[in-house]
Image: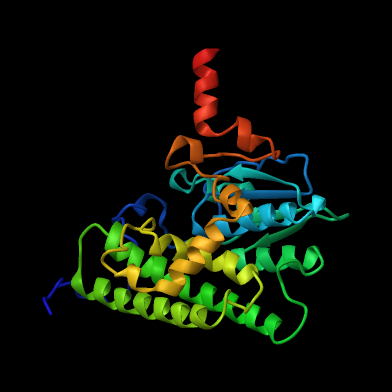
Length: 295
């Protein structure tokens, strides 16, 4: 294998230069806010502060699925957090999520507001809030749901921060990390493909929060949307993952959920903020642009 770098780590690491790559301007080795900025609060019981990355899509899909299932109490306001501009380091956001990562949720449905951060925790919180929606009450399906949800929470960083970073975002291509993480992601895809060859959904015959959490990452990967690394990883070989991906993508709530807080891609797929169900018809980026031109 080629020697990609002659870098020798110092005895003690110091933050004396940018890390490089696409997200260098927001990476730092300390926590806490960088500026004062309060978060907006809308009219609904749930206030979501997010961006339509895979982690953000998990939660907006959950909200839209709850509403589709008739849970009117799941109405929510979704506010756009631009992580490229450092919105996640504003004082208000840090109060909701001290880890400065999207998504972050304020549950104002009760007498005292509750903050919930980390996407998996938000999915569990909402499922329990609405009587076990998309979370089986009987065993072994309940344990299977939790197991696959935790599998995703542990696996996705190897796909995102590992393969995705070195394949798509690092300032230079390096053989060792790309090969290392490509091998791991293909192993993960094989895990999913084997499971989905024996069950319709990850937890069995029910669509659950485990599917909602996993689909935005691995579904986007096998469709060549995530990092455009599909051909490199031969994603067409994972037939069961492809079947599952298409099945979930066809759900109306999933189609809506992936649009919320989306600020990239085709204008008609972007709904920067969501405050009412009618926003999908009237406030996508293309419709707002057309209205502005006609004003």
